[in-house]
Image (cartoon, rainbow, N blue to C red; front, side, top):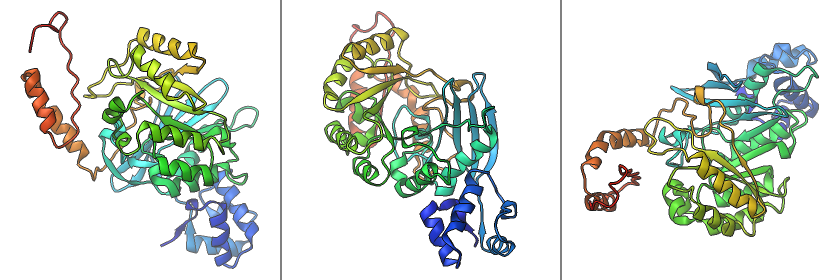
Length: 399
């Protein structure tokens, strides 16, 4: 089997060429061809000796995922579905803005975690992406977007916020980050590359030591009780340990703050009380907040917070001195907005089956009294989230 050179950062590629009996500078040449010129064939690498090109053609390849679908939103957002084999596909999204172009990259086929408000989490999990499949998303997007009239790359920022939990695929993600930052690769600044995590505390400490890029934390709750329900990982790494890990990360981070992502779920985490709890929670962590209006997907069980609730929530945080942005929903007409990425996942966790069963059984919940619902939830072996909405005027009518 041929070796896919897209799996190697510069150090690994240099080692590979040494094992082939080639000089180190050859690795830099090939890396520039692959990532800066978008070459997919060794024959295009005209500054390599013919003998080396022949050797590479015999022993190696430049294997990028095949493009399955390309979509463009009315707001200019682009989404690509890439084939990663055995019936699986992952999605990557380009978001154009006036001052920058941001690419949102996936790290897993599906997601090993099960955040209840996320479409990717509902799809289950198949496997981690290889380094070539991660960096291949940037390779494809660069090829598609080209350069600006000033001959600058359209993609100026990368966020690891697509499908999957990046820190659950640590080694492959770090190798891909290394390629992004390398001057012979994509030459991005550490400040312009962001890893988003749901809060894998040990891996946050490892990332700080080996590849400290900008960090975003998917917080989504102001207390452990709510976060245990909507971000189950919190049961393993509760908020106190997560905040301590954020403080440690800032020692080596390229930015002097953590970005806390906070999805706004109607009636779940969007009250003024939650905003005040957040202020107390992050008291010792320099940070800014990114409030994300929930992006609906079929049978999610959640509703987006009202604009008024979001405004009040934002104002409370701003009055406490925090920088707060409310994310503008982009690409929702092509299901490319935050929390909507689903791709194609051959689920190995039976999670899709579980959620389908919940939807089949949903009508029976509606026929239960509140005491019956309580007994059902307490006796259930799996996590069950029920959102009960009463018709107006019925709240005080007993069961």
